[in-house]
Amino acid sequence: MLGLESSCDETAAAVLRGDGTILAEAVLSQEAEHARFGGVVPEIAARAHLAALPAMVARVMARAGIGFDALAAVAATAGPGLIGGLIVGAGLGKGIAIARGLPYLAINHLEGHALTARIPGIVASGAPVFPYLLLLLSGGHCQCVAVEGVGRYRRLGTTLDDAVGEAFDKAAKILGLPWPGGPHLERLAASGDARRVALPRPLLGRDGCDFSWSGLKTAVAQRVAKGDAAASDIAASFQAAVAAVLADRAAHALAMLPGATALVVAGGVAANGAVRAALSGVAASRGVALVAPPIRLCTDNAVMIAWAGIERLNRGLVDTLGHAPRPRWPLEELRGAPGQ
Ligand code: KG4
Ligand code: ZN
Image (cartoon, rainbow, N blue to C red; front, side, top):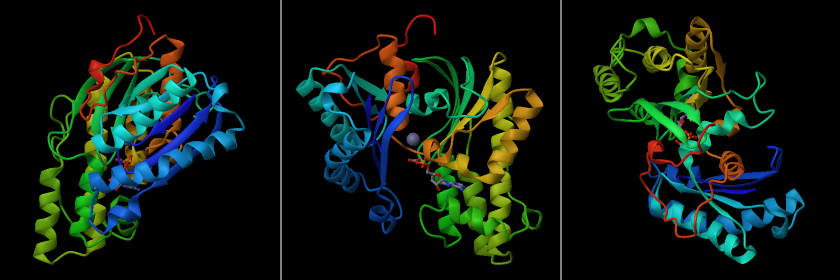
């Protein structure tokens, strides 16, 4: 399976065998091209995908040591995401499918994140079985999802304003750190004391598992403006507040999915040590495993797209070449196979 990812600011391609063995993978981050604008610029992203993806496909195919005629199918991210990038990846995927007479799979990016932990051999505790809880914590998404089968998802909660990675990036910017700020903020927080600065914990204890981060960000801005606290203490307090809220929301989400076999985290924020520690505490107290794929597969990549393609192809869920990329594409609207 050839997988292509181009929905945001990572250009990626991967070739997997049907059993999940990764034959070749490549990810090119556009971070440097967007950094001076302080965020992802859609038009720059689309052009960068167009410049990089065709040669990247040729490279991963060469490294995998197979020709296009050895492929069973082509899977490309078809949404949700920035439309320019989606058109580039889906268009290239369809082109290869037409040229080689292969099935085409239009993959929902969120389904890619949701199924990554099931790649055989990827997580030490073994592939989680359905149903499990997915906590998607990235720069663009902040959701609790019940993963009940391939193509079968229920969103249990989502953010009312910013994604959690966005909250990290905004707080980091207020603290004068470079974009994307999450890792910088974590480093600064390591030398700070969270107890010196009191910050709110939005929606903590509230019913359900929605999120809200804008009030916390505003509180950071007010505290910085006041000028009476060390940046490291503010960073530590911000991170502690986020971790506490995420733990609370995850506990609620697990209560909403009593049969959950595991708590799976994905997205760049899953790299954060304080967040991981808080979530492993929740998982342990609920008697489920915390499953965190390796960071390179938690952030945007094409391995997860190829794998989702394999899971769908195995269930006969192929798409037509008429499938148009969708900038908005809720997981609930996916087509699943009967059973699991
Ligand atoms: O999943 P991801 O790589 O990409 C997209 O969202 O497209 O997530 C990126 C987000 C950014 O907001 C970044 O600041 C955040 O994940 N992030 C972190 C850490 N590493 C990345 N946030 C907190 N702590 C980290 N160590
Ligand atoms: Zn993503």
